[in-house]
Image (cartoon, rainbow, N blue to C red):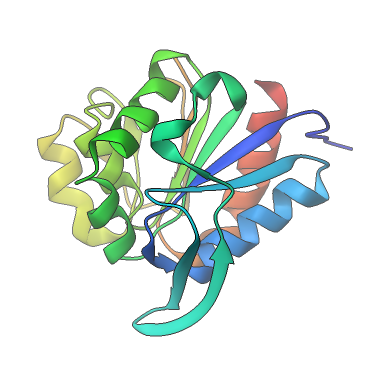
Length: 184
């Protein structure tokens, strides 16, 4: 059995706009594997998740990205939702937090629109990845090779980068992130 026992995984989201299932399903996968997920955001309090364009549940924030260090985490997950990464990429502390995972060689997983934050952090150059189709041009322009696949596990850099396109890909995404986070 694959275990994440003793591993802490950061889930970084904006205060509003996260696609709820892209937060809750990977979160549950980390917990089921014995890991400790922690919710980080750009501000304290609670975040507002969404089901597409409709408000869904709120979730308590464990820590603010600018007040945390990558040293406290073993891996990073970037859920999607259109507004979530769009807001994250305008927050210098969130972008710096993401970039630090790549600089430290720690694994990162991003789904749907989540890779927008990776573009802003300038960490996709030379990487093969997937995303929601509307990010294709942004990723290609940032130096990535975009492919239309359910899952891409890219080891072409100093860390493992796991990407998927959409909620329908969550089974493969969750399996890959647990497996790869356990190896890191």
